[in-house]
Image (cartoon, rainbow over all chains, first blue to last red):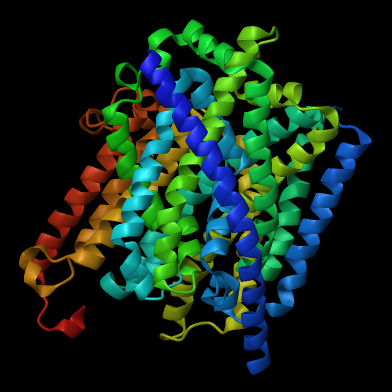
Length: 48
Length: 513
């Protein structure tokens, strides 16, 4: 049972830490891409 | 009420921010491609944010934490099939690459190209029925959660849900996918913060040693060892199959991927989603384990397991922060509603109403403006239906099985027909070349297997014995058996139907298909 407890503990640490790190990265880089989306849509509107 | 003035301020500010940012983008939406897939302009990071926001809602927290609360650590196994299937789809491009290369907006469009207009109509009809009755239980379950955390009296819960859904409806109907992307972004910041905060606050409050001891006390070795309970190999195999169909062909996922700016970006989103979706399952299941531990260590265990997690959150969160945590939960929920409203209304407006209108107009599509009006009206109709269904339907079994099997109504036929339409449509397959006869049988038979689960007992009794004997005697307790068989029967239907179709009506030249 000890082996399983260690496995679940490691899975939790891995999941929570990678989720936190990835979330920070995608929030910051996603903001730049959000601006690109609006630039693209604005360009489309101007063409029309 | 459980909120302080500061909590109310945070929640109100959040709702105003979301409503404003969601509705001001209307001016950027020029045509149906902008409305449904944001002109395919989404990059990798934003795509990942949007996919996660739409797939994390209070409903996700509820059914996953229920599994953790009732089973202990073994329920963390739920995250593993997501991890495997996302990596598989991202790395191999199985199903998703050809779909993205074709630049289609909805999956039924593929069926029209491969099997004709009738299959597009049938697939969309089953998707709409299965999808909306699946979506239809969200408001009722979530209302209960909101009620427990906020302390809003039960009599006002219905009203609360209507207000929340109306806000979502307005900004989604105005800005379509563009609104969904921007609001998903804001909502993701809050929901990721809330998810991690609750997990860490729970461990800090109870201590890892007490959490392990509580699972041991309640379940013994069964709470730790997946091979002696319900989460062993058979669960993994069934879930791999189910997740493959959800992640590759369900419209609320594919719409996200079709909005990516190119195929490479779409596949990259899939690959990296593996880690994020592992956490998306593991963290809420862990909340359930935390709630189990909390009520093992403290008095006041709720009689309804669905109340355990919201009560635990209420008890471990300091008052001033409760508003922020609640806004994060609300954010998770609103982003899911927005995405689901958009994807189901697009299936109805594009693939059901659009197909009929095209036929009536002699092969001409409706003008863009009319399509958008129909899409917005459909959203309103879907919203009214889910509110009604949510308060009308009474669960007979686990929420988890209801959600899986309502999806299975269309997923088995869709997965099999997509594989047939993409990989078995060449002449070299001879009599086994995928044809519309096979697709019809795959959809109808796949749906018939799981439809049994939703029939009331009195209605099931009306069927003759030879039909009743084909099904498990207690379908409510045999959800996984029905789910598993729906794929096998749908695949059988595709093979037999295509074989007969090829035999009776061979293709004389390629243009016939």
